[in-house]
Image (cartoon, rainbow, N blue to C red; front, side, top):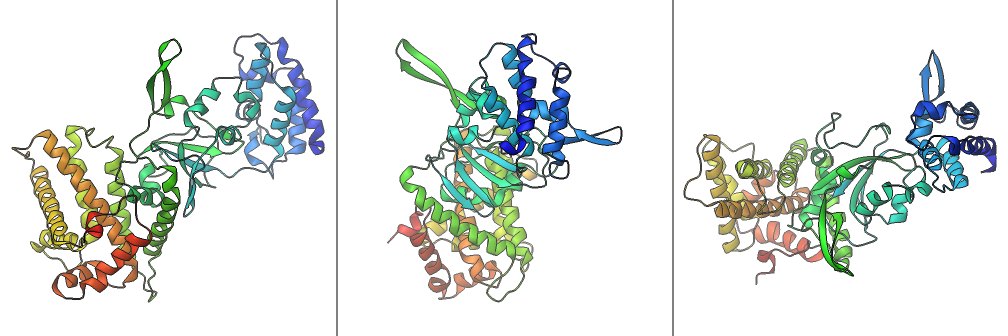
Length: 466
C-alpha cells in the first residue's frame, strides 16, 4: 500500500471527522462538505487517473473530475462514515486500505450472476463454455463487496447468509455498466433464460427435476454487488430450538438437488453436452459444412423449454390459465428439432410423431412417445381454435403436461447426441431409420454409447431395458 500512502492518509484524516457528524443518516452532500474531502478527491485523481479508471470520473463544466457520489457510495466509504457517526467501532485502517484498492486497483470485469433455485454441493465449480457454475463460501462472497470489513457491521451480512452456498452461473460481461442495479427485466436484451440458455440447458438435461433462474445480478468484484433481499426468494423454516419451535428465514430452493457423490458425473455430463451445443451452434460438421438452420432450431427449442420452466414452480404448481400455453412451448420445441424442410401439409404431425418415437430404443417406449405427442397436438389444436379440453380433470391435465416436459427433455438430449455426427438433416436420418435395417448402427449404438459413458442423473428406461 506504500505507493498510494498519501491517498490512504487523506482518507484516514477525513474519517476522523465522521465521529462529529449527527448520528442520524447523513446525505451525500453533508459528507462532501466535511473537512479534508477535497484532499481525498485530489489524491484520488493522482492515484487513479481517468485514463486508467474512467468509471471513477464525471464530467462537470467541461472538465473530468473524480465523482464524489461514486467515491462515497459505491466504495462504501460513506457507509463507513455513517457507522462511525453512530458510534460503531469501524476498523478505519481496513476501510482506508479497501478504499485505496477500490480506486487504484485494477478495474474489475463486470459479470452476470444467475441465482439458481437448485441445491449443489459445497465447492461446486463446473465450467460451462464461457460460464461457470459455482457455489460460493461466505468468505468468497464477502470479498466481492467493496469494503468487506463493513459487511459484519450492517444488515448486508444477513443478505449474504441467504446466498452462501447457493448455486450461481456467472459469466464475464465486459460491456455491461457497473452502476446499474440488478433487475430481472433487462431492457438491453431478452430475459435471462433466453440470453443464457447455452449454460442452463446442460443442467436441465442432467436431471428432470425443475431448475429455474431466481434472480440476476450484475457483479464487478470488489466494485459492485448490489444485493437486495427482495432479489432472493425466501421461505420460513421451522425447527425445534432450545425454547421450543423457532423460525428462520432461508433461501427458497426447489427439487433440483445434486448430491456430492454425483458432482464428478455432472461435470462430465456438462462438458460433453456443452461440446455438442458448441458444435451445433458453430455450424461445423466433419465435412465443414455450415448448417445455420440447425443452430436456429436448437436455440428456438431451448428458449421455449426454458420459458416453460420459468413459469413452472413444480409439477403441481402451474397456473391453470397457463397450462395450455406451457404445452405450446413444449410442442414448439419438439417441432423446431424434428420438422424437416421437406414436410408438407397433412404429413407434418405424423412425421413429428414418427421421428420422436424413432429416438427411443424399445417398441413400448416408442408407442408411449407417440401417444404423448399425439395428445399434445390434439390439445394444442383445441386451444388455438379457442375451445377447451373436456372430460379431463386438472390433475390429469398436469400429468399430461409433466409427461410432455419429460419427453421434450429426452428429445432435445437425444437430438444433441445424434445431430453433430451427421451432415444431413436429422429428420431424414430418423425417417430412414424407421424404414431401413440400419437403425442399430445409426441411432441405437450412438445413444447407448453416450448414456453409458456420460449418463445423466437417471439413465432412461429404454436404455436400461434388456
